[in-house]
Amino acid sequence: MKRAVTLTTLAAAVMTITGCGTGGSAENYPSEPITYSIPFGPGGQSDVEARRQEPMLEEILDTEVNITYKEGAGGAVGWTELVSEQGDGYFISGMNIPHIILQPMTQDDAGYETDQINPVAIFQGTPIGLAVPADSDIETLDDFIEQAETGEQMTISGSGTYSGHHLAFMQLSNLKDLDMEYVPSTGAAESIQNFLGGNTDAIFANSNDLVKYKEDMNILAIGAEETFEALPDVPTFQEEGADFTASIDRGVAVPPDTDEEIIQTLEDAFLEIANDESVQEEMVNEGFEPVSMGREETQEHIDELKSEYEETMRELGEIE
Image 1 (tube, rainbow, N blue to C red):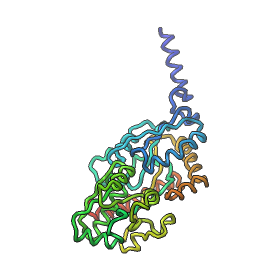
Image 2 (cartoon, rainbow, N blue to C red; image 1 turned 135 degrees about the vertical axis):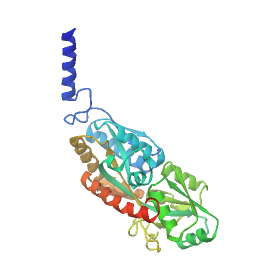
Image 3 (tube, rainbow, N blue to C red; image 1 turned 45 degrees about the horizontal axis):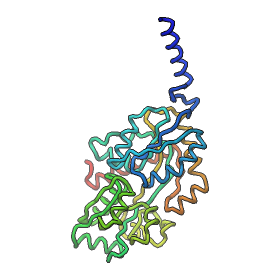
Image 4 (cartoon, rainbow, N blue to C red; image 1 turned 30 degrees about the vertical axis):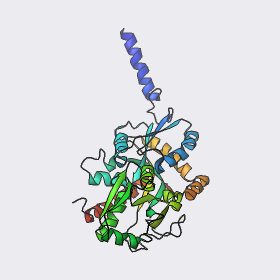
């Protein structure tokens, strides 16, 4: 009996060292299917990009990639799950900025902290624009502001709470102390459906949705820093006298204790896809901004924005 126990213990030790059956070794990573979790519902920007990446990731990493969804609380449910997972490289998650910064900053218990989100790369950006229905009497941002100042309370659809859309709403509201109500949804796809279904007066939408549904809406302004290539006739908020920009960066992250070699493997794979010319062309045609930021640059980007958002949230009265 003692000999059997000893042999079993030895076999387990060998499996741990070699990574056989555990999936935890960086040396043979990846040797099992990878779960790619999207913290929003199907059909949104994060899902669209993950589906584009899926076959390419499987080819580069030589393993199966399974896309799953963990929606709720503007992505917070998914990121709470992310930080509790094992750091073996077999669970990765979509990552959205400014969400992962604003939620822990403004909520007592977001379920995770920004520093727990272990970034791998950023591969996509979408400026956020404000739009009204195509048959609306509102033709310009000034018209919109005037109606919000003098008319009944206006409702604006957006994806998530303390997200890029919510931040744009707060910044616009703060400019003129406008009477508006933010109507959050579980994701961009639901937000668009609410707006197109006539359930809200306006929408803060991502650039690719603005491009896709531009015939069904009048886009008043966009949060890009300069003229957005896919919508050259749409002015920026700054050009319309509203001094702010609005955008969402999307990338991928892993649990806090993930091995550096595993992160490097994933970073290389995602950047190979991000730098693929055909992928970039598809993204531009769809209204996305192609981005290619590795782990270190992404972390620096997050740290810089965290400082900026702390100041912004204080000015908006969201934090002390």
